Length: 69
Image (cartoon, rainbow, N blue to C red; front, side, top):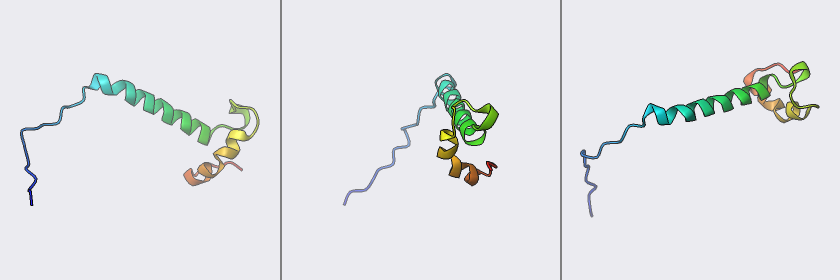
């Protein structure tokens, strides 16, 4: 049976902040957009007419504790 050899000479390369920052901003923007649709997309602040978005995220609202009725 062969044994795995641990080679400590291999070091992980760090990811530079310049490469990580655009992805972090994009992810944060997507999270804010999702939070808007789950938490506030109804009534006077609605971007999409009708109740389609409200009904689509209805159970998520209750799960996250947002009041909706």
